[in-house]
Image (cartoon, rainbow, N blue to C red):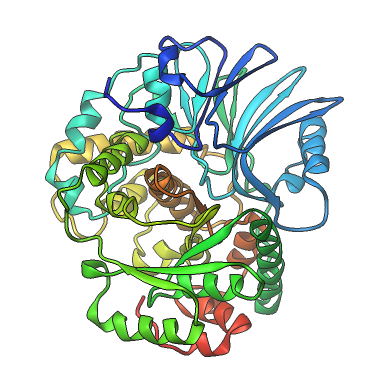
Length: 472
């Protein structure tokens, strides 16, 4: 076991189990509750609420709000426990996990994006957690030597974006819950609950109205709880988010990661947007590695919080040196590439084999002749992901490339990047709504695929910002 403070490494985390942890000292200082003989541990900084209905209980962990419609969270949860009303549940957004307990069942599920990561034990007693390492060290789960060897392969670094394939973690007995699936505690299986019907064709105007409702509800929620830190880049996703959130009275600051992360061609565009928006803004260069005890501490905490799959984060180390406002949350512009079809645009490879396609998407274009070790581990992990992600179920007219990008790339790498930064600053996903994704999937290809869809969202709220040049 590593020498670290679990309250620092797993900030905003939780653990739920049916047996008491083997190593209770790992949860010293955590809040504790016992509900229906389940042990629930939560970080002191974490929002947690219990809703009791005549049909059962729901423990809501993290940030949750209604992204569509006017039904209350209580009514939605009541319908979910009583009738498994997934249509109502689809309208929720945030960064949350929900533990549902009724007389006949218990299940764990999360927000649409999967931004509140949920990890579960496959064998032995039931246990789920926000962090794979928290779960592993609470129950003496050992590191998977194959995974340990895999992340040391040169191909893993050459891919550029560090995340394990499929739903794999660094622990053989622990897997990541795939978005659009819930974990059934009684059967110890995952169950897919979306999609449930074909995606309807829609107009671009209806899609923009969906954006209006989402931003209105997102703004309404964050204005009550947070001040906002947003990334300012020359790309399209971040500016659409800024435009959508800057309509209200939100307290907003902007940050730009400079140095090697900001190409020279992008700098003038960032400067123009900065001047036009007239919001507090600062640059941070995450390139150098300072000889600082604080910097190294938070690099190490980032490694623990991501389950040792990414190493020490230089970015987290640098972010730890900044001064954040009270209740400031970093809202990342992710979700945009789900909307605009990342794999549809950048990797057109489609065969009759899901496992082959998913392997090619994970491998990416940079690796031409991966080693046997890389290919063997990746293919095995992807096969497990297909099974536990329930890709054998009816997917209707969903393009499986869109589903895989959402559920694997974003649900694994994107969500774990939030864990990586949590020890320094709490994060939310900017575009996280199943109705919004559904509307995007229902557009014509020439309306959806590519950068223009995000520029048109920006134009809806800020015409000048939409015209300030685009880099990515």
